[in-house]
Image (cartoon, rainbow over all chains, first blue to last red; front, side, top):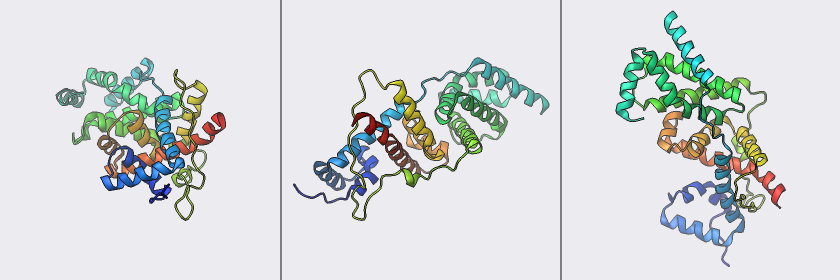
Length: 84
Length: 196
């Protein structure tokens, strides 16, 4: 098995560009070569993607603005407009 | 909101029509409230930041020059209101992002090799794990959390996130990558503990 040419630090530093398809072809090939021989970087890539999904899934889904809050904000605006 | 629709609404807002403010609250408010909920640690904090932001926006409306979309401008004000509240209520110094990034030895090899986590169960994440993820999100430095919320959770693109944050698109990309790395780093001990 050949030794990876790029160090692991380069893989993690440019991982988002790699995943977004923003690396030039030769650079992408170096990434692929590294990933084919480095289980730690493969695990890093997978857990990076998993962390993004988990952040999204754990976030609050609630979007409604409580009616009392809507009323309070509109009333405060009206008061401040009236007093100038 | 379409550009024409936004233009009409803006005119009515500038005339001070009560119904236009209510319409704005109903149409754009929910997305802004969602951002505040995702930025702030508690519902009460989120409501306070949302209220601060909306009232600031109403006050600043006469000066809005229309250079960006109204909704982008409102996001910027609400995100700033969140950041302001987070700063004033912070009890301990924020962690530097560098402390949350992966570490390497002098040859560029990972300090600690990464290991895979188990895939998430079919039915989605258990509530306890969601709470852990939310705590980890709260630990991200504020400026990084804001970018991650806007890009990964709200689904904004890089350009709009840059406009909301007052950053260049490249700075947004750098912050997003670091925020994701930091979130991965903060989650790693929990998922290693549970699944290894």
